[in-house]
Each structure stands twice: as C-alpha cells, then as structure tokens.
Length: 129
Image (cartoon, rainbow, N blue to C red; front, side, top):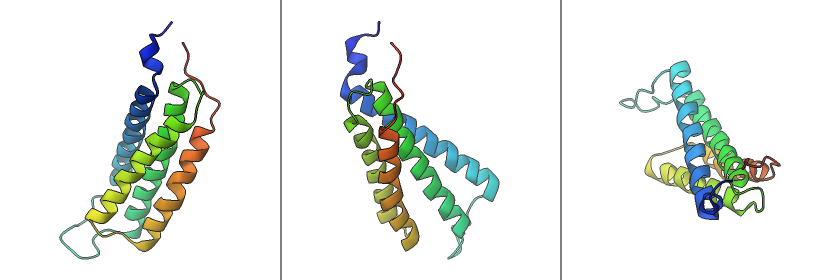
C-alpha cells in the first residue's frame, strides 16, 4: 500500500502540473519538428500553424494535468485537477503577456484550456495502490 503522503492533494497537484508540462513540451517539440522553427528576426516570422500548434499543446497539457492530478488523488475530488490545469493556464497567460499573440489564440486558450481541464477532471481513472 502506498504511503499516505503520496495521496496528499498538494502532491497530486504537483504531479498533474508536471505531467501537463511534459505533454506541452512534447507537443511543442513535435510541432517544431513538423512545422520547423519560427524566424523570430522577421515580423510575421511565426505562422498561423505554429500558433495553432502551441494552442493545441496548451489544451492537451491542461487536460492531461487535470486527468493525472484527479487520478493521483484517487478520484475523490476534482479540485486538484482543476488547480493543476489552472496553474498551466496562468503560465499560458503569462506567456501571452510576455510576447504578442493573435487574439484568436488568446480567446482559444481562455476558453479551451478550462474546458479541457473540466473534461480531464471528470475522468473515472483512479491511481492504483
């Protein structure tokens, strides 16, 4: 049987953020392999496809964070999943403030990331003992 501290809500939240961050990093790496690296020296050096792939990565990461955190906590509460995805959303918002992003991407992140978090937190997957 697992130690009781491993099921602590804070641990579940941290594990969810870590898992979501890994998914975002992997998805962004794959999109860079597929679409190529942006030319940041030119205005407009980032294509719409590149922005869209980052949005997809953020949404997948938020959903994964919520799913993993909720499952890690034993499915007793969805709070850990929603908090972990909320932390990733906060990071995305910070990124949007740090560099210019298209309005459609900002709106998409603000709508789709919480939706993915909600669906991920609804999961019936429970971490085994």
